[in-house]
Length: 111
Image (cartoon, rainbow, N blue to C red; front, side, top):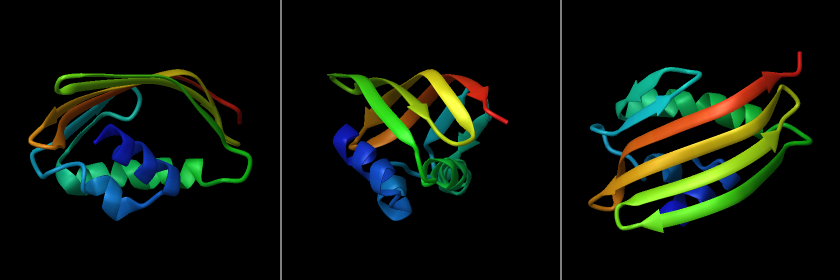
């Protein structure tokens, strides 16, 4: 599931990305708020895709760990808009989909 999720983000395939969630899923972030269900999660990823599809984006996955129903990643990135000095996602997977995700990031705007 985690590899599918990362591939969907890398290719910015919204339908494949949303296939990892249900209407009961929740994504909690430290910068953009909390997103409940597919419609709100779509809104979150629309914004992220818009930023990460720009020319010159550098995304680096630093760590990936999967233990039972928990997946954890650490990453950093540079976009034209922001420097993501440190970011981490934790995923709770239930019945093959993400039931809960947290995203925490230290983000420094460039503009």
